[in-house]
Image: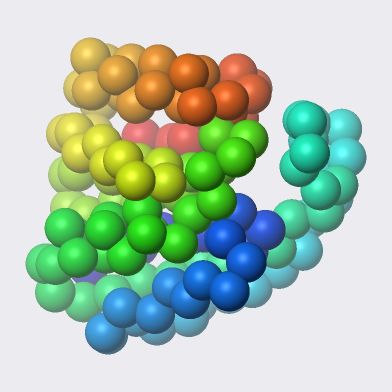
Length: 123
């Protein structure tokens, strides 16, 4: 089972994230006005999803293809013991709890413009 989320506002205009076998779990809006940075909006639409199977690469690539490159937007998901963190055009896969793998993804996020306080995905 693969489970993750994507922030609706992180998608490029006109982009669609719809890999085969994707199931919608929940959609909600949250007020992030206290932590939004740069050009990020004050409200985010959180889309939680899951998928059966093991096409981690396909899901990661589908996200990498639709994410907005500006402002360091990313999405992440869990596939078994792996954490997958996806930026526009860049994918990081590491075993959950791997400090070096997490640090590499966070360093990329910083360089891409992700605010430090948003580099806090769960393991």
